[in-house]
Amino acid sequence: MSRYAGFIALALLALAAFAYTAFKPSGTSTPSPAPQESTMLPPAAPSPARLPQGTGFDFYVLALSWSPTFCSLNPGGNNRDQCHASKDYGLVVHGLWPQFERGYPESCASDAPQRVPESIGRAMLDIMPSMGLIGHEWRKHGTCSGLGQVDYFSITRTAYEKVNAPPALSNAGQETRISPEALEKQFLDANRGLEPLGIAVTCEDGKFEEVQICMTKDLEFRTCPEVDRNSCRQRNITIPPQR
Image (cartoon, rainbow, N blue to C red; front, side):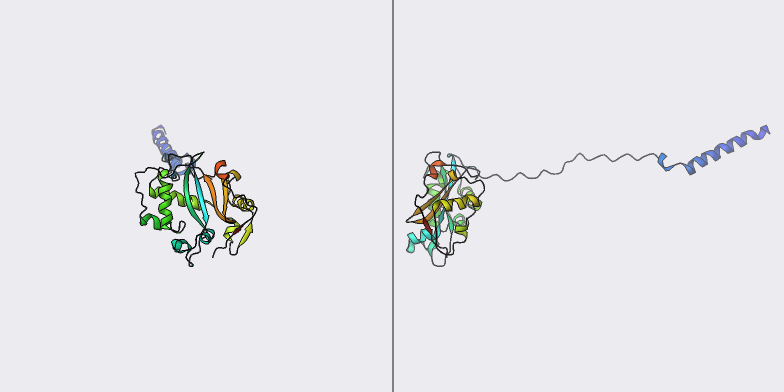
């Protein structure tokens, strides 16, 4: 019997090895290496484009003229671009004026051309309806902004688009009578952040002439007591209807 003992032990060993391999629990398998987490971050969102920054002044005054008043007070052929019977302008840009805390600069020395080329001016006619007005505003006020013509008129449009017209103007299908204070209140209600000391409603010949709104160089509303004093002192004014 002893002569077969070695063979029997070897056979039992082989059988045990086979059984372990065949019936090994799945949980004992060697785990695959865990994938390493990527260290790359998603691309950062682009930062908002900054407005062109003017220099040499403290803040802006955006002057928005009521075109029906201007045309009623300036009849004749000199303003056909704005006042022709086929035109129906409402609030238009009179100008974007660099301002000091007291007073303002005007007609400044500039390396930029004095004349505004049509390629720039024509693109502004929907909100500044006269090449003559565009050229005048550039020479008197734009040259004091520290900006080139393209940037100056670009920021003028941005400032214009920031202001919401109040109901008395957006629904001006017929002549309206209103107090300057009530019209100013409508502007305040329609434009969040605008304060009473940051706006002036002006008048001429008993009619609403324009609104002057003070803005920082980043076109945020701000106060400006000196400009606020330009406000109309009449008890009531009329708003000529928009065609």
